[in-house]
Length: 149
Image (tube, rainbow, N blue to C red; front, side, top):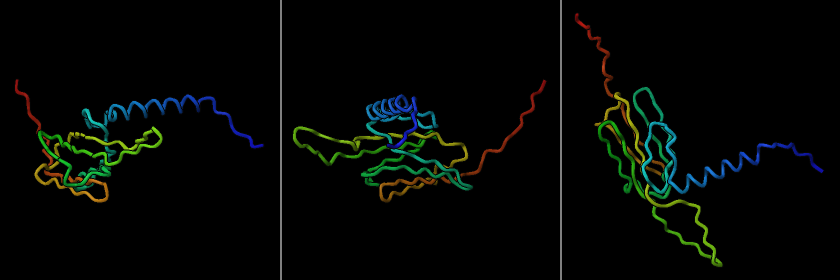
């Protein structure tokens, strides 16, 4: 007989995680106040944002979405990524249907810092991963303004 450590909070923690997963899959993801805004969408791709010396790099997981079907726009300092993953499978067996992969439209928005150069943004996709490169431009110089009496 094996001894198992008893954790009284494990069941409650598991229930909390399950409830979060259900709500997240039903409403298309949650806004985690990470500088991005999630609009009404069916799913939300996972995104990494990295600041390098001369650029910002946004990497998004978009499996099943062709790169040419992704729309990226930049307006008023806000970068928008949108697209759609189409449902190609319909599995029915003995009256049961199981669909775990989410399909439908997605929409992500990111507010870029003033140092981002919107004219030189580039993007490419490969193997279900979208990479957006945003070069840094000249940073606005701090200017002190004297107040006259």
